[in-house]
Amino acid sequence: MAITQAAERAALNKLIDYLDEKPEERIPQVMDLIDKIVPASVFPEQRSAFRDAIDRRSNWYELIMKVFDLNPQMRSRLLKTLIVDANLLAWPQQQKAREREQCNIPWAILLDPTSACNLRCTGCWAAEYGHALNLSYEDICSIIEQGRKLGCHIYIYTGGEPLVRKADLIHICENYPDCAFLCFTNATLIDDAFCQDMVRVANFVPAISAEGTEATTDARRGKGTYAKIMHAMELLRAYKLPFGISACWTKANADAIASEAYFDWMIDQGALFCWFFHYMPVGKGSPASLMPTVEQREHMYRFVREMRSKKPLFTMDFQNDGEFVGGCIAGGRRYLHINAAGDVEPCVFIHYSNVNIHDVSLLEALKSPLFTAYYEGQPFNENHLQPCPMLENPEILGNLVRKTGAHGTDLVEPESPEELRAKTEGRAAEWRPVAERLWQDESDELYRKRHDPYQGMDSVEIEKFERLGRDVAAEKEATFTRRHQVSK
Image (cartoon, rainbow, N blue to C red; front, side, top):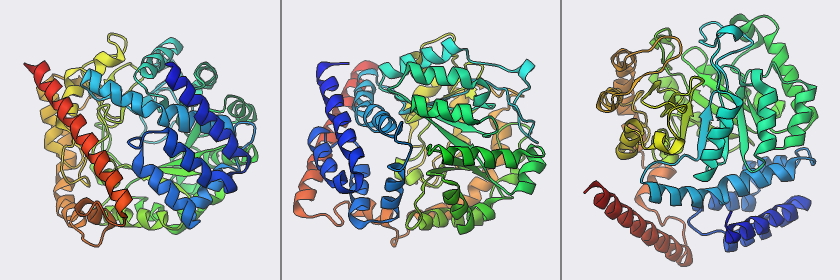
């Protein structure tokens, strides 16, 4: 770490300590200091939204205060890792790497420690222990070491059931205290000892799969599973540990998930966030019939936004929120996925690759033909409510695979892009006019911001915005020039 960055890290960590002592009183002061230390180009919109939440004492303010009610033995360390190491310091380093390497550099890396699972859920591809694929402890550490050099300090475990490897995962948390680790889990392996480990390492956060009632959960996952999930959340609450919910919404459960009762249930259980995933019919055994209807998707689009205005719960909807992140975030633009066999995939739902992490470095993977095609092709649709090259633009994925020579990496049975397209193109055609109508909705705040970026700003704020815009434009021009010279 450079001396200047070390000094910046120390200063920001002191601010976290100062804030942690009296958060309600000191948040506004700390934000003023952060604005002086951190360049204006680092998360400007997020910082503005944070200030707005503080000023209005909104539901977001209530959520912020919940964070400061977490276990005091680990709270300050988690905030330092997540806010300082993984974002404020990491983002400029990632930007420099993007300029230097002329490729996508991820904000987060998803990886599967194992394809094994302790449950045998209906329709799931996870393997039994004896037939599982695994990334070794050394593999995972190597990925993290390489990622840190590029500025990536957020690692997300998927599977299989990652907590089958919980001893290794806790040891990795100990090795990399400047990284934050999120884990998608069925929660049945969370026990008292593991909660104590989470307090001790202070950089591990579970996202619990919880999408239905006791009857529907046990019918799919096995008798008693729901009770184990509820017990895990009870333990996490008792230790005042942060956790969230992961919810896949399908045609069968979309109406139940898009309900105020479900949001209230998550909040009552102690969840701080929920990640919503649109069902993807990926894999030969995954039926298109489970895809939410167009009407359900539009309802979800509107309902999540409504809940954000009044519920103390951070939510991300990974199809309907494309307008907040500029479309598709896969292919390393903001994240990538490495499966348990080591295949480096653009997305957890795109089971195609032409490199394996056992054969190439992480940077070489990011510069491989398929990832380069993502880098050059994003966004895949100017309407960011149609972000995905598979779900909303199904003709694109086949072109990418053919152009780059990528092969199928599904761990059960590889599926051709043509087979996958046959399942998604009908729904894509149905969604297109709805997406266009929503994208052109003049009453929508984001529409107004796209067409009037100065909305609500005073003259000083406008000058700052224009200066930042000029800096970004100059940076893009320099990047284009360098890329053109390299191509020559």
